[in-house]
Image 1 (cartoon, one colour):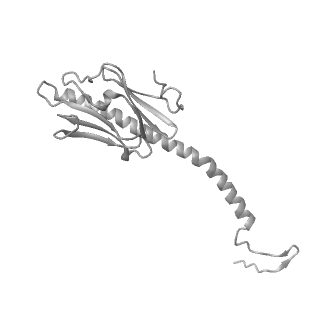
Image 2 (cartoon, one colour):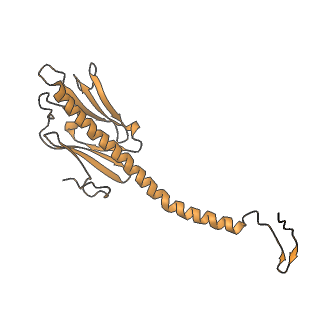
Image 3 (tube, rainbow, N blue to C red):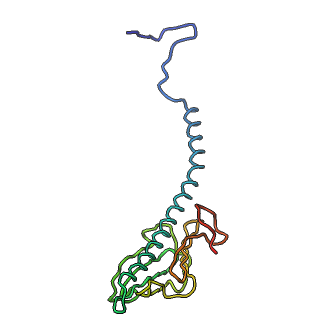
Length: 187
């Protein structure tokens, strides 16, 4: 085993370095601060886009579920299926799928999506026909004749769920909104 003592050599006494100098610590903290100042805004934007996509995809899945449930029930004496969008403010909203009456007393709630489940996502715009849509039980067609939409926003990002009179749904970006993902601009 080799032992080194603190003895004098040509270059002076040997010293053990057990700590960082104040300058090394400050340089490290400055570099870390610069990296974080670049990374945090990118992470925030990524989180906003993810939350927005999650809310819009869930709304689209609920729409498809409501439509297929109406066809599944089928028949003149079957319960009606309603897709109801409620918005008390941009930050406080819900999408509901109910049977019998438009999500009121005596109806059966099949599914519900609330703003509390999608923190930071606003329902910024909504077509009147989607505030309460009744599906036709035989063919699953919605009860409107022109294209309708639900528009969501998270931070500076926006997505829209567009629904045609035949019940087909697509996702797109509103005109003039920030480009992200592979979403085309709405027509």
